Amino acid sequence: MVGIVIASHGDFADGIKMSGSMIFGEQKDVQSVTLQPSMGPDDLKAKLEEAVATFEDQDEVLFLVDLWGGTPFNQVNGLFEAHKDKWAIVAGLNLPMLIEAYASRLSMNSAQEIAAHIIETAKDGVKVRPESLQPKEAAKAAPKQQATGGQPGSFKYVLARVDSRLLHGQVATAWSKTTNPTRIIVVSDGVAKDDLRKQLIMQAAPVGVTAHVVPIDQMIKLAKDDKHFGGQRALLLFETPQDVLKAVEGGVPLKSVNVGSMAHSVGKVQPNKVLAFDQNDIDTYKKLESMGIKLDVRKVPTDSADNMDNIMKKAQAELDKNKQQ
Figure 1 (cartoon, rainbow, N blue to C red):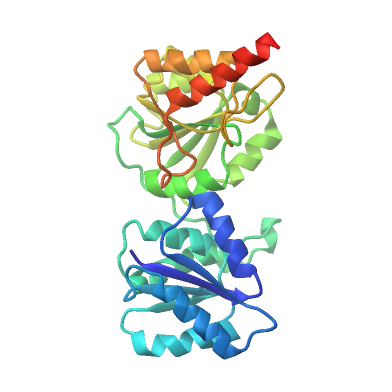
Figure 2 (figure 1 turned 90 degrees about the horizontal axis):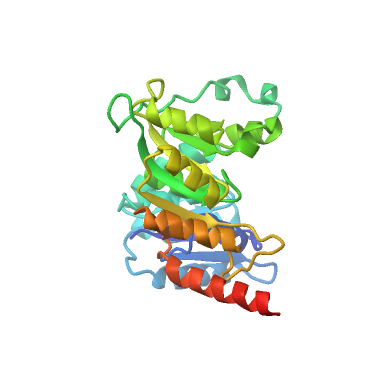
C-alpha cells in the first residue's frame, strides 16, 4: 500500500488527518508531520524521515503538503530527489484531495499514479455560492456518469443505508467511491415535504452523481416500474429502519442494509457511539432479519462490520432495565 505523509505549517496536517479519518475511516500507513514555530528545517526533515520509516512499503510514498515553496514542501523536496522515480509530491492540500488519495489506494499501487489522479478532485472541491461567482471555465456542468449495471427496466441497488444524517461526507465520498452509484436516492416522506432539505441534499451529491429525494410510496413505484431510470446504479438512503421496512414490504427488492448512524432522542438507548434504539427500532430490525435481509453495521467501507444481533441484545437489556426503574 502506498504510504501517505501529510505535511503542513502548524497543526493543519494533524487536523485534516483527523477529518479524513472521520469520513473515510482510520487509515494504515498515513502519518502527519507538522512544522511548529520552535522548529528549524532540519528538525522537520528528521520528522519526515521518521514518518516514512514507519511505512511497510517505503518505496511508494505520496507527500501531500499545504503550500508549494513553503518549508514543509522544501524539506520534502529535498528527500524526494533521491526517490523521484517512485515518490510524488502534491501541494495545495485540501480535504477532497486527501479523501481521493485514500480511495485511490484501494485500486492504485503507485504513488505517482495516485498523485496524477487526485489533482482534478482537489480542484473540483473548490466551489463557491452563489454559482455566478464561479469562474466561467470552472462553471461548466460536470459530465454525468453513464448508467452502468442492472438490466433495462430495473435498478441495480449498490447500497441501501440507514443514516439519520442522510447524505453527508461519509456517504458522498467513502461509500460513493466504493459503490460507484449513478443515482443517490433519499427515501423519506418527511424530507420529500421539506423543500430546503431537498435542495441541500441535491447540492451535496458528489460530482457526476444525481441526487433525488422521493417519498416511500414513490420509491416502491419506481422499484416496480423504473423505466425512466432502468439500468442505473442506485444508492438508497433511509433515515429510519421503519422506512426501510415499509419500502421492502412494498416491493423494493433489498437483500442487505448498511446501518450507519441512528440519532439519539428521548426514550432511546445508545449501546454504542453511533446507534440509538427504542423498542420499535429493535423490533423493526428483527423483522427485516426474519425477511432474509442482512444487516451490515459499518460507518465507512473500511470499518470491520459489527454484530448487529449483539448490539440489539445490549440495547434490549438497557431498555428492559429502564422499564424496571
